[in-house]
Image 1 (cartoon, protein in one colour):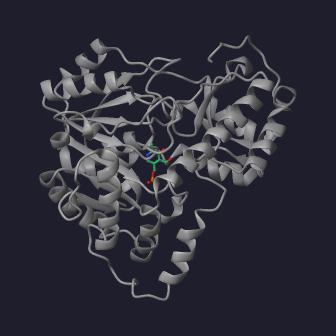
Image 2 (tube, protein in one colour):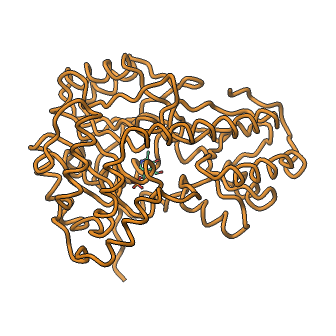
Length: 395
Ligand SMILES: Cc1ncc(COP(=O)(O)O)c(C=O)c1O
């Protein structure tokens, strides 16, 4: 038989999504893949039932239904501080996953370099390989996950075509400050680079941190491809609704890429989601209160169990230091954790360019009773997996 493509050999299936399958296999509380186990807002679900009897069953306009784009333009114009044109500056995609892939294919040529901060959301590695781009990794240093200006500039000197900015960051929960974003902007301008943002956690930013849209920085609109989605904001990860917002010359090119990748996002789901896009500010305040309470509950539980963790400024992930257990492989630790303790986690090595095997990622986008059950199981952690080394303090 002929050989399969080389590009499929260059990456594995997603470790995050693999850990969901491992959790299912062992009946573990799945705190690996980041999705909620609570219901989306009732108003959206009610609208979904109505939509099934309305005329939304055929292809919508490929770059998004008119209603969806108009509602999204109103919402994001308010948040991003500029008037966004629903016709020329929005491409509705199948989740931010497709938005990011389409953005990469829109701005890079095979062989181009792309700056990625490490740790990074694992999709970016595969996005780079699929589009033929070569990542240049710039480390974020714990505990605050700061980057060095010199290291970043050194990466820019290699003439990258784009920088990928995940803000708030998965997995480390970093929310980039205004000063950090200004620095990235200064370098993007100096070295004439695009910035592709992934802002799916834009509404999950814990006080006193604030989300700043990179595209809203002075001079950055023209070179920014803003990607985001409805998955996390409305607890509808299975609906696969995301989008690109970009100036018309980028959006026009992205529309073509998107058209041939997927044609379009599901028409009835776009229509039902319009209800969410029209929610008032109160919805987003409540969402943040809910996640703040979950973060506090979960971190307090871990503190009580004397487990070292990172405190996220945004998103809903924490990194846990497992060095005391003395495993050479964090993947093996996660499998043992799922099997013997009954909690699903993601090995930290799938997010880091550096050789890191002493961290795992858990998330807390779950009902409180699920989080209590996970904490209850974790209380048996050291009995079921006896520590072998002194812990490296990671908080
Ligand atoms: C940073 C980041 N980007 C994108 C996604 C996927 O988003 P979507 O469901 O919109 O494809 C996730 C999901 O966990 C994520 O954490």
